[in-house]
Image 1 (cartoon, protein in one colour):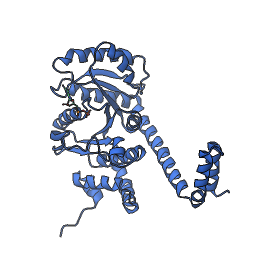
Image 2 (cartoon, rainbow, N blue to C red):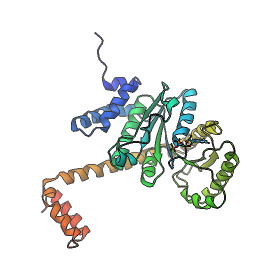
Image 3 (spheres, rainbow, N blue to C red):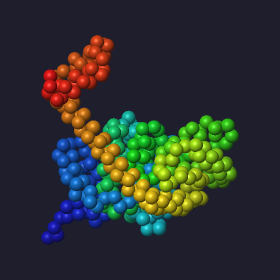
Image 4 (cartoon, protein in one colour):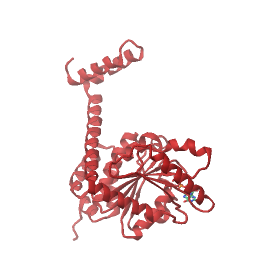
Length: 326
Ligand code: GDP
């Protein structure tokens, strides 16, 4: 009889079904699942880290999924294994997901060396990012050497995604004239590569001009890395214009950061920030479960709500209950 391989071994063998199963355990809110997910992560951790982690962001409709399809197919064609994970805060509200729609990335997701995972639904943004970060490690252990984190370009989710990637790509639309002045503000200091998408047909020239404008605007924005000055280019996911260059830029960036030592320190900083984020979440959940806190939290909340107790003093009181000092 053939011995059944452990989930850990199957994931290390690159089995995508096992990988999906592992991620499901990570996303589960059941305590027993959580415990086995923690064990799995612990075992797979030494096999993670060997990928380039890319964040792709932009407003809805800018062409993120079409871009990922075209870019991802190109990467697979040149021999890479590509996983796409989503950080989607709207899944919290709708229970749906930006990657949930099966018609998205159709040709890409069918490829043998592709793995696509929608954002977990029904979670807080903090929960979504936490799980996405862990899923990313699992994908690396399964041999995926390019991990794309897709996020909708709205505030917090963008920042959270930037906190877990090596390079951050921002997609923008071509625009002309006065409109351009306004949207220039939409450019963030998170971006390492800015792409003006839909640079095809009649829009090609407009997209090139838009890229020039962004390039000059970027001079006044502080770069995220010392060894890499953000670049701007135009591309089209429809006719492939500029797509291969995006990968070349990413490789160039990775080399520059590795040479300067920033690649490693950036990842180490991210690991520390992750540790503190986890610690905060764990302490908070312990505090909320604490019997002393639970027995007095309602009256303390009421006092703050009515204005009888100052929030700072209330926080201190809760902490003292937690520590058992009152
Ligand atoms: P997302 O919401 O950012 O993921 O955007 P989608 O990838 O769903 O694309 C939104 C719309 O833009 C769709 O109708 C696409 O067909 C179209 N689109 C995406 N990429 C391009 C492109 O490179 N050129 C043109 N002309 N249209 C594009």
